Amino acid sequence: MKKIGALLFAATLAFGYTGLASAHVRVEPAEVAQNAYQVFTIRVPSENEGVNTTQVKLDVPAGVEVSRFEPYPGWTSTTEKDADGKVVSVTWKSDGQGITETEFVQFMFQGHVAEDAKELVWKAHQTYSDGAVVDWSGAPDADTPASVTAVTAAAAGGDGHGQTGSASTEALDSDRDPLTLGLAIAGLVAGLAALATALLRKKSR
Image (cartoon, rainbow, N blue to C red; front, side, top):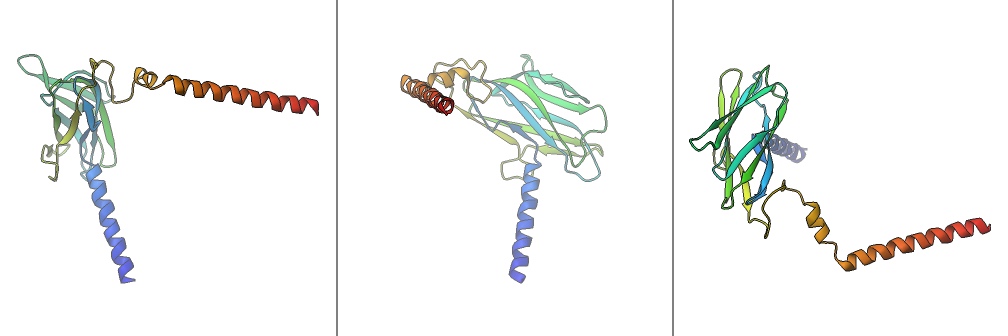
């Protein structure tokens, strides 16, 4: 019984730490390609008991140029730009009570990943209704780590337009070689023949 109790206790701790880890402010997707136009999502959970998240500021890495933001009901977004007009940060502020400890929100925005980008480190600053601020800007093993997006090499011959992290129709079409198409047609013909045979047998009865 003691051994079973110890295992249950360890499992409870594991699930607890997993919940805390998943409660971090993070930006998705976890991986993008160089020279790609990408829709990003910042997920903001609220985890402080008794106080709500009322604001979150996101620092935009040098390797991406952000251009558009999806409006979110009950929240107002404002941007900060440098001397060249590049967006260096965006702040979402609640018009109401904010996010309670059992809720989260997701803000979406579009950006272009630079041709020479290596890694995107997103530093976020989460403000609570009591004035407390949590800076999600630490190393990956820190208590409040910054969200990191890995960057892969650009696709050969691509200009990055329309890439949002999923395979395009053109890429799927390029994989359909003549052999695959022939097998598909043969399968269709065989299926129609079997159907016709079954109908003829049924009619003869």
